[in-house]
Structure formats: structure tokens, C-alpha cells
Amino acid sequence: MSTSAAFPGPATPGDGALPVPADGAPSRPVPRRRDRRGRGLRGPLLPPGLPAARTRADRFDDLVLATVERLEARWGDQLDGTEFAVEDVPPSDPAPWEDGTVPLGRCFPAESGQPARVVVYRRPVEARAFDDDDLADLVRDVVVEQVAHLLARSPEEIDPRYDGD
Image (cartoon, rainbow, N blue to C red; front, top):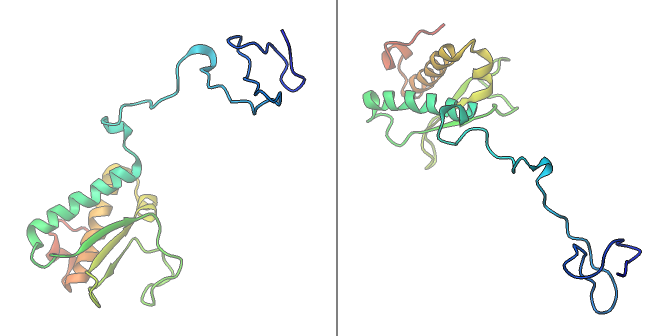
């Protein structure tokens, strides 16, 4: 058996040695993929179809979508073409009409070929909610307020369940 100074160990094929080119220069070592401690490769803890496998962002998106579907059932004609979006945080430059507080959502009226848009900011809304039920109520209130602003109506007119607290 011959050994190389750069790669000590057996140099014969089949002994686990790295191949040595015909010119005698050792090739770069290939990292071995191994299963440490023989427990199998790491994978997801839960299958993707289970509810616990959904992220907070996914659950938040579902809350917004459920609210929008409810409003579209009642105000579908007026909301036709309106885009609803969720962003993590609001941009750092506040709109001129906003005071120093962090906005929970924004309404952008249709202009210059762009459709009207309602944006809900996930992180500020989640930070203000005490629990999941409170989060659902807060998401509903924010979406209703933005739609009311877009349609120039009162939030109570848009959704009779609007709380406003």
C-alpha cells in the first residue's frame, strides 16, 4: 500500500481512498455525506399538510383572506379589481397624513392604470394582539377600516360587526 503525504491512508481503489490521477497529483478531497450517529437524515418535524406546520405568516394570510372573502360577498361590485396584500412591516417613510404611530394598514386608491390596493402590515398587527382571537378581530377591523376609507363609507356600514376599539 502506498500513501500520499497530502492524503494519508490507503491508495488502492476500493479501500476508501481518493482517486489519484495518472500524473501523480492528488485530486481535491470530496466531502463525504454521512449520517451522524445513525439516526437518519433530518427532516420536517410535521408533514406539511398538518395545521401546526403552517407558519404565523401563513395563518395571518388566511385571516386576511377570510375577511376579504366575507367583504367581497357583500361589496363585490365596489371592490372589483381591488388588490389586497400583506406585508411584514410598513415602509420607513410615513405618508403625509399619518401621525407618528406605526400604521397597521394602508389604502392606495386606483390611479394612473394601477388598481386600488389595501395593504395590511403583519408584524405591527401581531404585536398589538393578545391572542389568536384578538388577532382575528384586529385583522378584521384593519381590513374593514381600509376598505371603508377606499369606498368613502363608515366602517360600521362596511361591516356591522366592526368594533373599532
